[in-house]
Image (cartoon, rainbow, N blue to C red):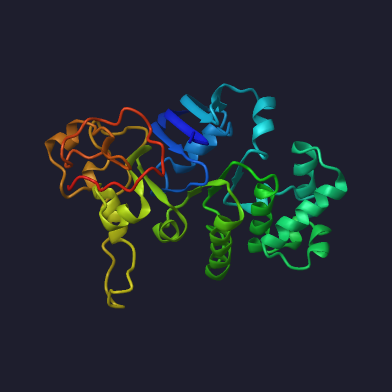
Amino acid sequence: MNPVFTLENLTVRFATPAGEVAAVSDVSFSVMPGERIGIVGESGSGKSQTFLSAMGLLAANGKTSGRALFKGQDLLTLDRAALDKIRGDRATMIFQDSGTSLTPHMRIGDQLMEVLTTHKGLSQDDARKRVIEVMEAMRIPEIDKRLRQYPHEFSGGMRQRVMIAMALVCEPDLLIADEPTTALDVTVQAQILNLFRALKSHTKSSIVLITHDLGVVAGLCDRVIVMYGGRMVEDGPVADIFASPKHPYTQGLLRCMPRLDQALDAELDAIPGQPPNLQSLPTGCAFAERCSHAGDTCRTQRPALRQLSPARRAACHLLEASPPSPSPPLGGEGRGEGVAA
């Protein structure tokens, strides 16, 4: 089985008046058909920029190297016209702010149907039927009325449902959701997450969920990739990483999460310090200054992303020595146990 999407040594740099910003460095992984992958890390870890650059949505001062293969086709080499044939049709992206992602002067129905008439060549009647079908799956009430309304007449949660419907209406091979619940209140967040759970049985799309919430990953994803300082620090099946995290940063993230077996007044074990400055990354491990286990090697040599088992990788000098990963693994193949730290 061939991957739907593969990143090979993806690197993203931004030129700023204060100097170059190393937003993403040597990121490599694959997404298999039907796989659900969570990308987690603190703000500034490179999660969103990884996929914005791959989809050709990088800011004007950004520069990308490496490869971003969608079904074998390198997206980084395509011009705008060729990219537009893929984006919104075979590969789609849901952004954090649905309010700025929808065209304010167009009715919701027209925006949804335009996707189908543009990419699939459907008639207005056939496009409308497909839109209604997807909106029903998104549990949007009073569909006939909603199709005639404008984005400002929708609540934040309802606009996000529309964005999900727009992303799914063409039945894409790859769906990328960038913090889809960040701007919503807790009740609406739960509703949106329930919709993503339902997608597992309603679509064959591969889903990449970019988030800072490990609880969301635990409930929705098959595999998790942890990023820090623009690099991948751990990668593996969700159940394995939650049960036995190998990288100290992943361990710290999990300790920050509240647990049902904790006392109500128990304090969370926060990770000390601050994320690294991407304009002047340290020579060694970017997490060394915040890691209680760091030694001299950690501060002077950057750890390679090592293959610990067929399904697990991590980048830490504290792990038992093993050869560096030669290539991005084809995700979803096995649930191998990692090497003990």
